[in-house]
Structures are given as structure tokens and as C-alpha cells.
Image (tube, rainbow, N blue to C red; front, side, top):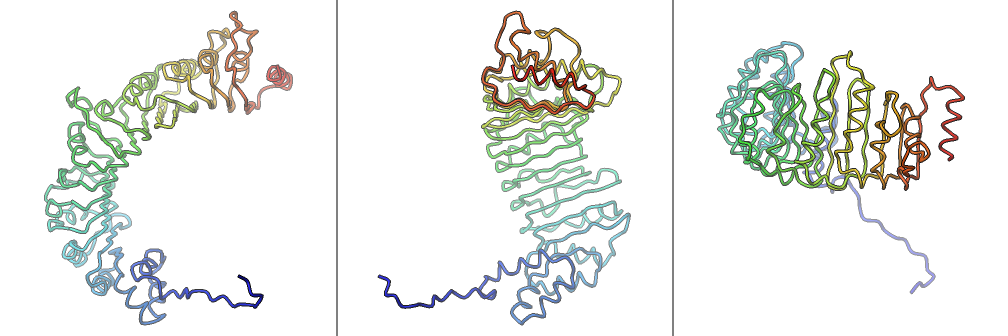
Length: 426
């Protein structure tokens, strides 16, 4: 009961010194310069002890400073970052420091075109039982070999692996905790990748780029499950990678495919039906986004997953209007009955009768469409498709349509825009 007397409410102490040392030590991860860290160590004896103990982020450019950091960090895990500018070589004494202390490494980054990066990699033969993050990016050099003996062949704690410009025989079977894989500019066939996936059951994110010399060597009936996968991205000059034919993609995952093409027929026409057969979990499509320009991009989303396919067109001689017409009509091969949102950008349709046009063919089965957005398209063909008086069957296209958003082309005249508005009002 309130007695009417005034009271003074005391608040609990929020002194920064009550923060656990493990949390307080993370401050060093957000400093921009060494001088900032030095100033922090001068605040008090307690701060100095915590921050010096965790002085573990090494850029290896100054061997003397690197040696001091290693000494002061005592037994703390090390985060090693070596990315020299240009073709700078790492001094020999720095190489020795890194190789002798690799067993304390928690994160290791080697990036650049330094000629002695391959030599440094060869020195990593002793175990690294704390290693969680490994990133090797070899620029402007031939493919650098990473042997299976690296870190003693044991990477059981590794969680993130990024290898760019690397040819490797890593100990694929000792990565049961890996969650992120990023391979670029290497050389791997599908059998190697499938063998790897079978021994990394916790994989969540996979990115593969420019590395498929032979996409057809895996047995046709072999399928590997990736139960924790959230995203898979494949970028390659090849128009078709059959890797997806061998993967079971779980519900909710997003698959991204990027490629280049030339000629009058885009491979995207083959991608859509083939891969949606494999990604059977994407059976309830709620939104589709199609963009035309220097290529074609199609994004399909639903509550159970997504597919993004982007094909960049190398040959400018290809007639884009006809190609766009073909691709727009190919959407009919998708389960679009449940689609509620459709966005189309930069589409220019060839002159055709309404019922033969791409807009009419794709809109007709969309009985649940509620929002249609047209960005800088030839809007007339879409509005004709929505007008029952323009087709012989008097079919009502998109009967549940609630929003029609038009971004009008600048070259469309005032009278044409007035005609569009009249049709919208009807």
C-alpha cells in the first residue's frame, strides 16, 4: 500500500568494471588503430591486463610489433591477417613467428598476390586445434596447392572456409562443424563436392564460383541431403551446372544461379522447369520479380524457399524484345496459381494480338494476383491483357487484382498516358 511518503529508489550499479572480462575484451575488436588500444590500456591496471591479454589480432606487416603482440597475448587465441599491398613478401622472421604460433590461431586470413603466400601455406603442417575461420585468397598467381597435411589434417573446429584461387586436397572428412563454404576460381568436379557435402552435415551457406571443369561426372542417381542449408549460390560461365540435380534442398532455402549467355535463346528457359522439379519444396509461389536489361533476372519466392536466376547477355545482337517474350511466357511452366505479387521491369513486347502476347499468357492463370507492378515497361500490352473486351473469350484476367503500379516510360506521349489511365479506370 502507498503510504504517501516520498521514497528514493536506488538503482543497481552499472559500473563498466562489472562487465565480464570475456565481454569487455571484445572492445579490442572494434578499435581502428593501435594507438586507440594503447590509450585504453592506460586507463587502469584492470583494463590493461584484460586488453593486453587479448592483443591477438595480428596484421603481420611489422614483425617486431607482431612479436610483441604474440608475447603479450600469452595463451589467448590468435587472429592472423596477412594481406600485403602489391607483391610484397613477408619477412622471413615474420614467417617463423606465424608458423611457430599457428597452433593458437582462431582465425587465419591470407590474401593478396605476395609471392611467398604458397611458401607460408606449406609451413602450416602442425595442428591448429582452435582454428574456426580460414580464408585464403590468392590473386594474380597460378592456382596455389593446399595439401591434405595442412594443420596436421585436422580441421574439426573449422566453421567458415573460404578458398579463392586455390587447388586443394583438404582433409574433407574432418570438417563436421563447418557452416560456411565459399570456393572461387578453383577446380573441383561434382563428385569432389558431393563427397565433401556428405561430411559437412551442418553447412548453412554455400557459394561456388567459376570452378566447374567437368559438370557431368557424378552418378545420375546420387543425391546428397543438406538439411541445414539456408542459401546456395552458383556463379559460372557454363550455362548449366547439374550439381543441383544431386542435392536435396531443404524447405526455406534460397538458391541463386548466375551465368552469362549469348545467342537467341537464353538458358533461363531451360533452368526454370528443370530446377523447379528438383526444388520441389518451392511449390507455393507467392511473388515473382522479372527484370530485363543487359540480361534477364527472375526471382521466385514462397514461404518454403526461393530461386533467383540471373543470366547476363554477352551478345548485344540478340533481339531483346523477342527474348523477353519467350522468357515471360516460360513463367507458365511454374506453379503460379498461388502468386499474389508480380513485378516486371524493363520489358518491351513485340507487336502481337492480345491473346498471343506474353503479358496475356502469363497473367491469365494468375487468378490470385493482387499486386502488379510494371517498371518502365510497355504498359499498353499488360492493360490490354487485363481488359476483357480485348480478348475473344471475354475472360476476366486477374479477377482479384487490387493494386496496379505503373512507372511510365518517358517517351510515352500525353495522349497515350491518358489512354492508359482510362483503361485502368475501366
